Length: 336
Ligand SMILES: [Zn+2]
Image (tube, rainbow, N blue to C red; front, side, top):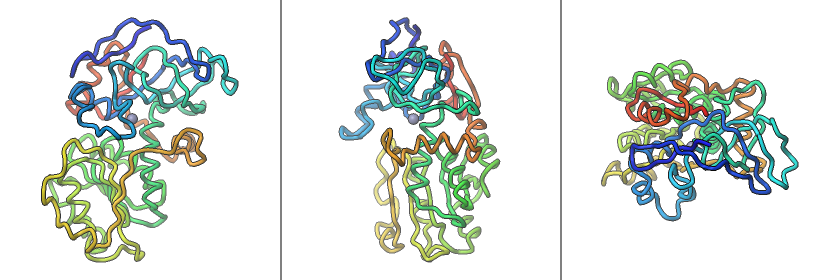
């Protein structure tokens, strides 16, 4: 079968390898759609050796941090079961599934962490349950409630999905973004999209909120400027309902924040809560956000389809990565 390998940075090659045999508790999935994750893109841009140096040793996901190389990359997978491991009883051949594994940029992939993909959802939509799970987890962790105000800093794929989830929670949601394509897409869902190149986002949020502090601010851009905005947007007043503002940091930062980025006493002075949110509950956990993600798509509360701006066959995966790097596309799904 065909499988993609990252030979060096910015260079992916398709090679012929034997079709995997599923371990006793795994199933073999014919991959129909595998969306490219931001972490895959990090590996592509810098090369895997470099990216592993940047990831702290105890980082929980470093074992498959965008790894396209030895194990193969692509973890946002949807497809159809074609073979069952010896101990598998829950699944049958032909089941449509979506889930997370380590090597979805291939024709077939051995998988364990899978969920039923309802007939209402396409394989392309199914390949978004993992990033949507990240967004669902961040929004649930934020504690946002009906009638709250939220700001999402950065409308890349994760920021965009967080915005849709915050809207689905009953919040009013303001988004900041500089890229025209992302602004247009966010504008389909957000209450207002603010372009920081045109207006001061801190002032604009203050205006929109009548001087009050948003209940929740999500940092989804991974830049010094946006972390500073998060701190600055927490005004000196309490939020509309007397809660303190929560800042949810969802980005992976490529560089440490610059020294003296913001007033060091601002966090206590504004009684802020800063929370990191990396990922979702483990497979099978009652609160597993991947299951919630599927349900939200199924009932139409979240629509991932407008995010998918391109689909490429496995053979053209390299050009798919390039169009993401140069900002031509927002999300690319690889089809095999
Ligand atoms: Zn991912």
